[in-house]
Image (cartoon, rainbow, N blue to C red; front, side, top):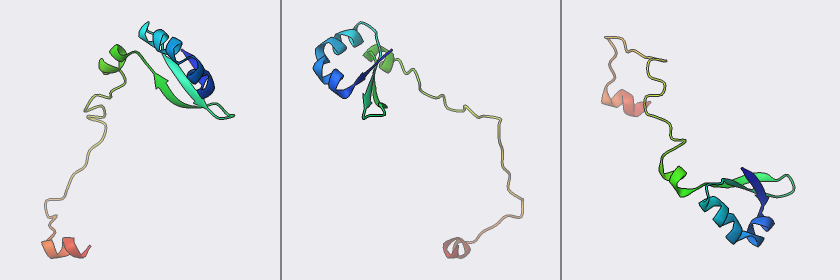
Length: 80
């Protein structure tokens, strides 16, 4: 994965898109500190759902319970 500044990215836009089509990922950086602001990845990698977090990732890791005598009237709820 290579990193480019915005100036380099603008100057070599077509070549960068060709590289991305070939399967390479490119990071675009901004400013003196070269802060990473964007990542260009091949569309097939994006569409495959890589990086998505599955639902239920923390299933079984935490719980909560309510006491059987827990009750809250509408007026109490609205006053809170």
